[in-house]
Image 1 (tube, helix red, strand yellow):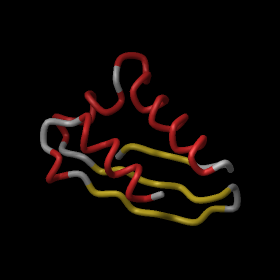
Image 2 (cartoon, rainbow, N blue to C red; image 1 turned 90 degrees about the horizontal axis):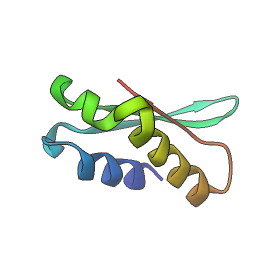
Image 3 (tube, rainbow, N blue to C red; image 1 turned 90 degrees about the vertical axis):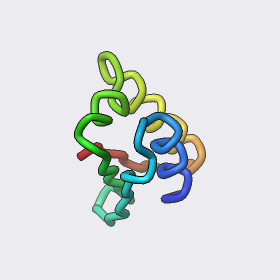
Length: 72
């Protein structure tokens, strides 16, 4: 799952070499924290959060369970 999040994030940003994904366990399920270059943060979030929400939807569908994706 971590690889999928990383692949999707790298495909959106201008500096894919600076993408880092950390997996954390929470009570609700796994949480993937995506770190990108400061100038790519807006690109990953998208207008009104549409890009990150699309990534979350894809990851949840692939996982078939509750999964979180957060940008830092």
